[in-house]
Image 1 (cartoon, helix red, strand yellow):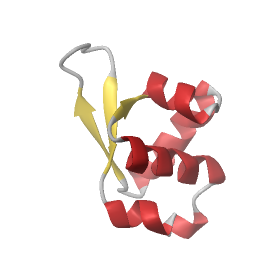
Image 2 (cartoon, helix red, strand yellow):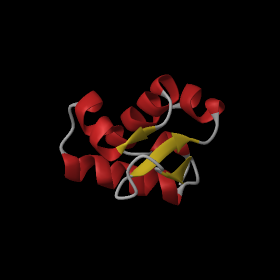
Image 3 (spheres, helix red, strand yellow):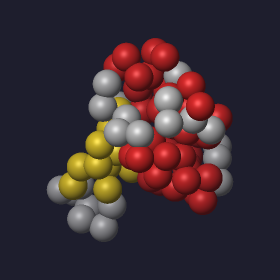
Image 4 (cartoon, one colour):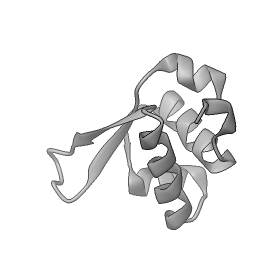
Length: 77
């Protein structure tokens, strides 16, 4: 899937990650004003397209930190 064919929610999450840096799912829900399920779907699509990376959260092992992989991907979204 090309980044231009990403769902609008995925493009929004990608832009937020590009602007705001690494965030948890909870941060993304709060920042994007999208439903938690929509954010999960957006993250799934971004991960499938290799546009984001998941990092271990050392502050809270129950949460994953998501980060934009390439700045170019954000600018193209």
